Length: 120
Image 1 (tube, rainbow, N blue to C red):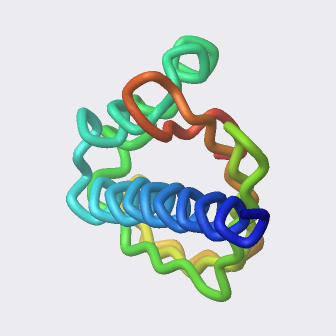
Image 2: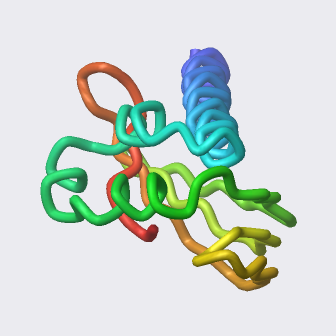
């Protein structure tokens, strides 16, 4: 019986991990298309209200070339933390900027699925 419970709990983690990865994939898609509405739909309501500049910044910069590298996902109940490196190319005021760095994104499981809740 304990082995069955362990298997069931791991199966749930796999589903959560896939759901978190899908949010991250959609985030990359929103950035690459400059789709502020899609990007905003991925944010937790409280985070969207606290950071209204995020959507506006995406509208100003337009499409962004973004690639996540060495991404690690840590799940803990209703919270996920994603850490890794990124490479980004953006057009800011007519200048192309190439940026690399480290990022940590926090997601919370909401009623309607996983949403970005911090770290952007």
